[in-house]
Length: 115
Length: 245
Length: 86
Image 1 (tube, chains in turn blue, cyan, orange):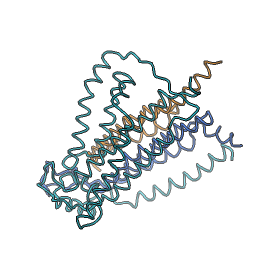
Image 2 (cartoon, chains in turn yellow, blue, orange):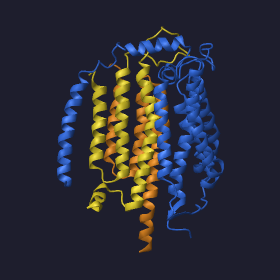
Image 3 (cartoon, rainbow over the protein chains, first blue to last red):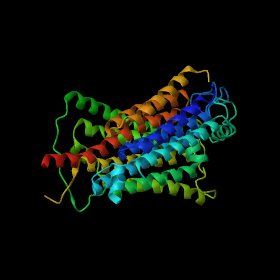
Image 4 (cartoon, each protein chain N blue to C red):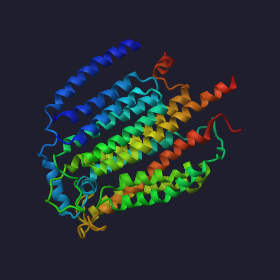
């Protein structure tokens, strides 16, 4: 049972990959990529968790009175959540360009266009 | 490659990846285990530098150079979106028609707007003390402004949101982070080192350079999100295909 | 691993992630992604990561779905116009 959170992260990642491969709409594919991305946060935070610990914020906690969870992985996940969203924006901008140039957002139709 | 062969290859690769990942899961440290060597060291260092929120200390002090990289990605992606979504020669702007908003929606949006803006500013300002900081507060602040689009209409939003101003502010915030890093060199320590006095633990001015870098990131993220959403809103609402009418 | 809240949150994350992929219409997917973002924020809170939960709540439940919705609107508009011309 102690690997269940890791397995959830693996499941979310694989489901996202499946969506990416079978997607018929590039906007949907970008959404699937966002699902893949969220699996890394689940994995990171699961690795940093400690039983019976509290958040590593000492504004209302006496240092040393309780164990705290690992702050390093949280810092990694935190920056990536925001930066990942802006990268999603670039991908969506690319999709909009493709739709303007070719009039479709279906990857299969796009590869047919190229011949 | 036909669709079927592609799916077959993907299924083969996916199964292999799944087997490897599950095998790797069983080799990871136990979930909830007590072994966190880096975490313990980071907490000690953060307390020594008088920063109550350990995560802010990691982001803006102990791993500030890493955050510089993240900020560069953010800046580059804003730049990319602005270039990709510019108005091309065969497009024109059509002024969106003012739309009637239901009165309860309008009242609610206008009521929540100031609360959300203040919340965003609070979250940025208290980043070194309580959960929050530049990354989260910036997003809250930027999305809060767009309540105006929900509550009134697009033209009202455009009036309080001169995109050029936010683009300049974005660049200024990015350079402010760099200048703060270089100030460390001038002060005789290292790039992005915490060279200011640490202050009293658990007050707004504690943590040396942490609140300053945090504020720079807050401004950067807020402006970046405003510019990104502005480009997408322009595309979705205003810019239409076809030459000037 | 004795906290039932964590197990419930993990199951919810797995279910909503699957739903986000299974829903093929991007406009509806944006709504499911908003749900996924909220559920992830709950999971991060019970995993004692309030900082990450806060940013996930702001980004996952508002920003990403909004960007997807706007893209959908832009992509669909010219098609609607073409139909109207016919």
